[in-house]
Length: 94
Image (tube, rainbow, N blue to C red):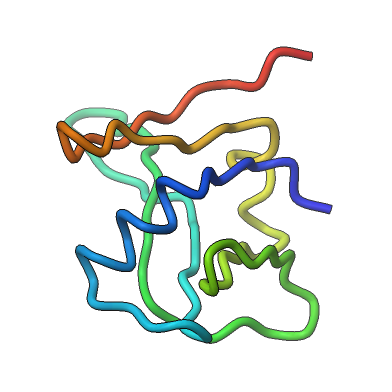
């Protein structure tokens, strides 16, 4: 099971920002980029989950990740400040 925690506020944020409807799905993935040796960030795109993907449905939206991206996504929490329309990504304390 994916240990990435996506809050209900984040699901509502993406529903509003991306005009998503119940039953839509968002893939969470590792985005590579940056200057020099680069860096990692959270990527999000509307897509369709596959059988082996790790999935969770929140506020009618299915958030999913491919198994190859779990090294980055595992133990992360995605939350947001709805008044500032700002997303926050942090590590979950063990």
